[in-house]
Image (cartoon, rainbow, N blue to C red):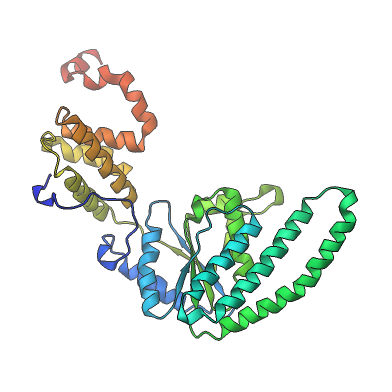
Length: 356
C-alpha cells in the first residue's frame, strides 16, 4: 500500500489545476466540447453559458483548462469575482471597473476599455441614486426626490449614448470576449440574486459571452421567490442559453486517485503500523469509498489521515485509522457518538456472540 519511492512528492492540496498534464480526471475532450460550443454560439447580442457541477466537482479546474484553448484561438478570457460587494450599485461599479482595467492591459481591447468604463460609471451612479430614492419614506423630501428623478431621467440619455458607443466598439471585434464568473454558488442567496441581475443587465452586449460556474441546485434555490411566485429554475433558464454539465467522475478513476493519494501521504511516515490486507478491501469499499464524491474529498481525506497517522506513531491499526478518519471528516455527527459505543465496538467476537 505504501510506496517508499514517493517521498519526494508533495502533499496534495485543494488548489485547482491549470495545465492539461494535470488532468487526472481525463476531461480534456469535455473541455474541447465546451470551447468549441462557446465559439460556435451566436454572440451578436451576447450569450450566457452555465457550467454546472456540485461543490468540489472541479469547475474551476475545468475552466482553467478551457482558458488555454480559448487563448490559443485568440479569444480573451476575463475574470470577475463577485465576492466582497454590497448591493447592486457596488456590484455594477466593480464589474465595469475591473473588466475595463483588464481590457486596458491588453492590446486587443485597449480601444474598448474607455467606453466600457464610462458606461459602467454612469450606470453605477444611476443605480445608486435610484436605490437611495426608493429607501426614503419622508414626504417632506418629495420635492428633492422629484428633482433627483429628473436628473436621473436626463442622465438616462447619456447612459443610452454610452451604451451605444460600447456596443459599437464590441461589434468591431471578430472574436468574442469571455467573462468568467466563478464561485457564484458560495455567495448568500441575496448576493446570488444580485449577481444574476447584473448578468441580465449586461448580457446583451455584442460579442460578450458569460460563463457562469455554479452548483445549479444551489442557485435555483437562491433564485426562488415564492412570495412573487418566481421559480428559480425558470428564472435561471431564461438567463442561461446553454447549460453545460460537468461529466461525472468514473468510479474506477476515483478509486485509483484515492489509492494514490493514500500512498502518497503515508510514504514518509515512520512505522505507520502494517495495513491489514485481509480486511482493507472490505473497509475501503464499504466505509471509505462511499463517502468520497470528488477530488476535493480525496485531497481533504489524504491530508487528514497523514496528520493523524503521524501523530499516532503506529499505536493504532492503520486500517482503523483510515476508516475512523473517513467517518470523522465526512460524518462528524456520527463520529461524535463513537465514544459512547466503545464497549460495543471493541468487544471480542466471543462476547458479541454470547450477549447478542
